[in-house]
Image (cartoon, rainbow, N blue to C red):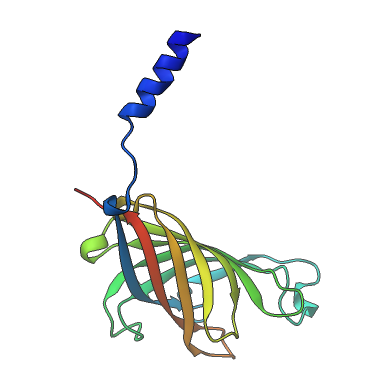
Length: 175
């Protein structure tokens, strides 16, 4: 019993504590382009409830995305920084509110090969929506933080949207 306690104390003594000096805060600003129209959509519905079509908020609709992330609001005139891959679900019964589950996967720039996982409620017609950063990979290993979304453009006929995301991430500093 005493040897087990000694082993635990030894293990605790050799662990490296995570201090604030080993953490870094990064601010990312990207534009998310959700395109459901045209010949090459980046968001597609994959499931719907029996009542989705009669619901005023599309309640029960599930959409899978592989949306471009750019450094500016123009889809064709801005630099592609990565992809938002995941799903969103119409989870509000009386208000258009989405449950967002997505990874921002970076394919260019200094964050190439890294990703940030975002999850949370997105009340689409609210000016600023906040979602949680729940993890990350690569440069963003052990990430936590929040993302703020602001609609830049929304086509009510097609549902196509461009949304500005400001993502604030705390993560480990790399040596």
